[in-house]
Image (cartoon, rainbow, N blue to C red; front, side, top):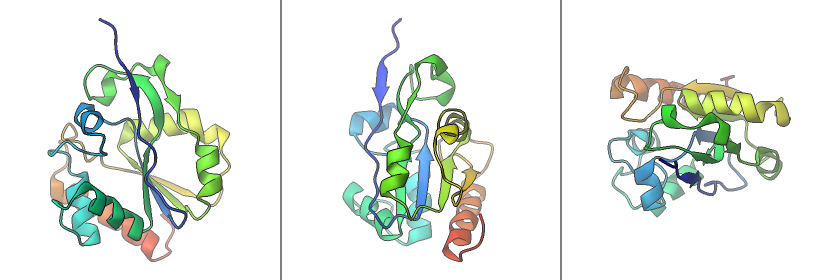
Length: 175
């Protein structure tokens, strides 16, 4: 069985972004809908809505606007990869190409914190991207994945960790 080549979306960001949230690669539902975190069981939008004060059922455009207003950018580590299904564990590591973070950080020079939405995003970034970028003033932190496949933490536990991380940046504390 041939694994399909998957391509990520463009970043959601404006020049004022201070926080970058990175996933690994959109899942099947997200790719089909052309929207980040389109799987209704993924807690990402519910968490962001609670933290930023918007309706989690708002239009996709309104949710993206809320992120931008909060100076949060959204992207994926991988530009492309092959994978059957949606699980990160099914990504063929030999097929990974990463996004152009050198250019991204150059045009988004206010980024001071990068949060990884799960372990795969962090490990891929540290392996393929970190050695190639100069981000001495940027802090990095892995947050619990909002994916429904990551069930070791409850929604409330995930929300607490995400809130603590975002609040640390808001208060200019080291992350």
